[in-house]
Image (cartoon, rainbow, N blue to C red; front, side):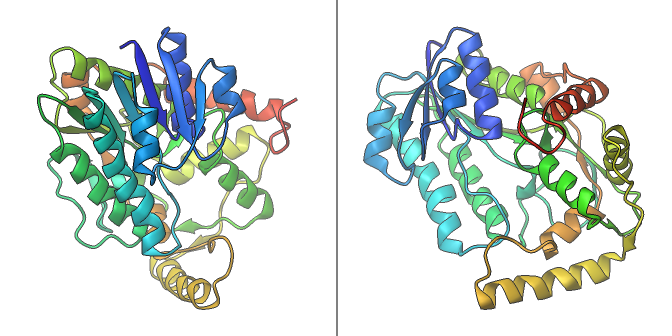
Length: 337
């Protein structure tokens, strides 16, 4: 791997991939909607553009030998079209740009949400079928995008999909900041029994998995046409893990509760209200979120261990230590000092 392009290289996962590539001496180009100072500081060349623009992507991919496709529209609400054009059409454009430029390696950042069906998933593997009834456009379009990537696998273009679960760590702009904000405001409630176990993935381990997948495609091709669950290798009790983190940060533990049925009903109502009145942002509860917070969802990483030689080098405890140190440098909620 000599030259690599990363779509979404300014995002949390994308930037971790960029930093790993540049540290390896790989000449790295970032494609995103803006210029990203952090990516540039890491040594990457930044191109501002839209992955929905196929001609732009074809030009951007010239001279590359590997593509990491991490760009996506995430979230819960929004029109189906807004998700489809980015997550499906954008992915189709990435594949077309790879083929046009003779690129041989494509690593796609997917999500375990593609198999989540609203029931407990415990220790399952990649033979799980795709969800037949995804509750949000994000999950539905990521299903289609992953199918497209894996179907594109060939001798000319080897493809693979990485499914990291609940990515967290220093630099997180989504999961941890939202948890901390709602915890500080006293707006979090334990949904359901509170005994559910979930996978989590430290950001450095996720970057490792992407590198291993790319190297596998270049070498023996064992990862070609395959999807892989990625995590810490051992699930946590979600609410215990959150409260342990809150304790490290001197935040009050979450002890108020709401039944799954009540949370699911509230999510349904709030989705309708936000959609009807076109309210900005996202509601504090949705049907999909209620299921995610109440159900167990963890997976075996045996396939990644076998085919990618993946193992989580940063343990959950070490990762939490690093996260707390980073948060405290920011005064927990402010800007980094």
